[in-house]
Amino acid sequence: MNNPRFARTAGWLLLACLVAAGVLAWYVTRQPATPFAQESTASADPALVSRGEYVARLSDCVACHSLAGKAPFSGGLEMATPLGNIHATNITPDRDAGIGTYSLADFDRAVRHGVAPGGKRLYPAMPYPSYAKLSDDDIRALYAFFMHGVQPDKQANIPSDIPWPLNLRWPIALWNGVFAPTAPYAAKPNQDAVWNRGAYIVQGPGHCGSCHTPRGLAFNEKALDESGAPYLAGGLLDGWYAPSLRQDHNTGLGRWSEAHIVQFLKTGRNQHAVVYGSMTEAFNNSTQFMTDDDLAAIARYLKSLPGDPQRDGPPWQYVAADTRQDIPGAHTYATRCAACHGSDGKGQPEWMPPLAGATSALAKENASAINITLNGSQRIVAAGVPDAYRMPAFREQLSDTQIAEVLTYVRSTWGNHADAVDAKAVGKLRGHTDPASASPIILQMR
Amino acid sequence: MELRINQKTYQVDADADTPLLWVIRDDLGLTGTKYGCGLAQCGACSVLVDGNVVRSCVTPVAGVVGREVTTIEAIEDDEVGKRVVATWVEYQVAQCGYCQSGQVVAATALLKHTPAPSDAQIEAAMINLCRCGTYNAIHSAMQALAKPESA
Ligand code: FES
Image (tube, rainbow over all chains, first blue to last red; front, top):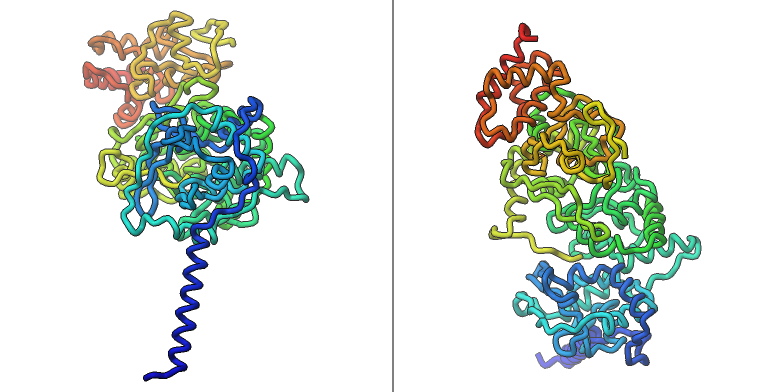
């Protein structure tokens, strides 16, 4: 078998493998390009620092990189990945525990490309596929804020509990190659400045798609801008259904005006809805701090995304309720829900949201309806004032069957036309949303 | 803002989202309406708005501008309310009495809409909580009120 042809082929193959391995090794540890290689120190210009603070608000960094009762940006929020749990890191300018030794170029690579100094890849729980669209100016301002506007803190990072070899980071570079954009947002010349500003905030710092865009098999957002139909079409995450932000009449923003969107993001409420679920954090920490111009730009951009009548179903219209009380769930509704949401389902806008025509009562996914009934709403703090009214938790008062029945009633009354809710689905979410259970929900990518 | 309560007009200075209960009790001193839970769960704070029972602890005051509010203080100015109170006395319903203003208001609202309610309708409407457990006495009084001859 001493075939010279065989030996030659094997040799070539070996060489090809070596070259491929070399290219791979280079690719997965490569430092992405950054325009900031020449800038070494952070400017302490107060105007730039405060501009950076605003970019941090737009980007809602605090939501994951801070825990209640701990120093701002000292990290700690636990997040689940398909492989195990990780913790958001300390991003204060502490030189040992935080990012105090980062140059602007290091900072840029981490925020926009998900690459830490030394080439280590970040988990995409950090929404760098969205932050990739941040402008150079905003990155420079953000860096100035984190270096000069944030107090250093010694809080040590918590290692992930992902076992070897799954904790190897280099395969993420391949994921990035397929799913993460590398260029900042480029204005669309056929759209005006307001639309482009809105698109920039929504796609970039606002990273709205992290929750509102459905995810693919590799946990990638199925679209990262308006060129993809799934973009902001609604996604299920952490036991909540983040609804469509497109012009869907039932499950999206089809019935909202631009002014309604601005009011919702500024005050947490409007005639259609009140923020709840994961959106409460986004409102409390981020959207209410945006300028009126930026909110108007977001509204303009969102109103330009067409709906999909196929997915959305027949358009909802109010129908007065059948007053028979013998429908299962009707009695529970009358005694537990009607005081706030009205026996006519119209609520008391803008304080108590209507359930007639509500997204949660029209969407196929019922997670939000079940979750808020079991666990109530979190405190909404608008302009420093906590809300006067809050959805109470019914987990101790109503059984799985009672919750399933009352939600089925809500989802089939006043013109609402969504599927019945199954008691098993309630039981499942009851378990997952009980922190003392064996399988509590741990927040996922944001 | 201008409120109509018990046939009187009041000028009130309050935030739009202030619960009606706070305005009634703290600003106007009408303390017959009670605070129980503040979460729409107990019914102690029930008042009538345009003849319908609402829980004033979860009713933003701005929502009742231009509507007629009736509290326990004026319930006997209403024909039905007067009968309810008389029957409540006759049946000695109250024990500690804390929840009873809400109970009377709920009973009045039911009987104004449904003069002769069935047992099932009574059960569906009389859902306010009572820590003394006067439910049986409430039910007896309601049955008496529901009889057509007492109308
Ligand atoms: S105090 Fe209003 S229902 Fe309990």
